[in-house]
Image (cartoon, rainbow, N blue to C red; front, side):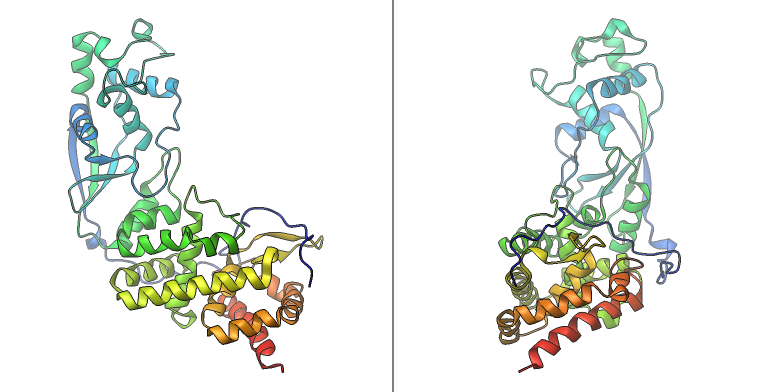
Length: 379
């Protein structure tokens, strides 16, 4: 089947996890006793010292932009400190080495770093501009302010809440989701990469950056906010945990596999890697440009569909190399059946609306595995 001239849309399709007919199915709530957050009163000088020595991580492994605010917005924050307007509360996650990751307050902290923690001759040092009231301090760096104003800024009180070590990962994930409210809130994959540090997060990043994954998705998945890692996370959850253990809440399911990956043996991690790369290779070779894309009402192929990605790749990963090669050899027959499936309104519905519900997850896996088996058994 010739696929070279097919017109397709770029990017990733928005997913409707739960529709009005399919409400999110919650699992057991965590014990409130597991929420271990302490308050720590500080002053600005405390924060600045930690920023100077990189004890507060503004740019950890997950991809966030600390410099969204303009110089005007940053200058207005400093002006607020001078006129003694309290800053909003900061939230941090404490690491094993006692360093802090910012959960909420990134832009404010980056402003303090630019104004007070960088070397005076650093070209990125903040110079006050477009102040609302204190025009006499325009075009000045921190050291150029009167001594009394410098002391006032340093002594301005702050309140920080810190998630302590030992807080369960699922609880920390929920806390991240609830309280990061800055100018660029964290995406789910960014939160997981912060919470599940170590073997699990490393595997996600490794596979997301693999040549096989990039080729299978035609390099159309934005990596700047770790969406590529989210796709890998979905694959690993359905591959490793299986749909029989899916209880209807996708986010909890994705967290469950991260917890398991943290403890898995090297041999299991190696098998995950081998089967993932195998699935990506055959997805690219069999489906080419149409991989993981629905057919829209206008007959054109749409954007990458997340449910199609996980069901196709996991189904391929579960096959041995011999069967994958057979599907590739009989790709024309497979694509014909696959196209018929993409034109079936019932199948389209379960990969479009309420995609995280148990029935729809089970339905799409049964449908894809059925056509794979039909092709494999048809001699």
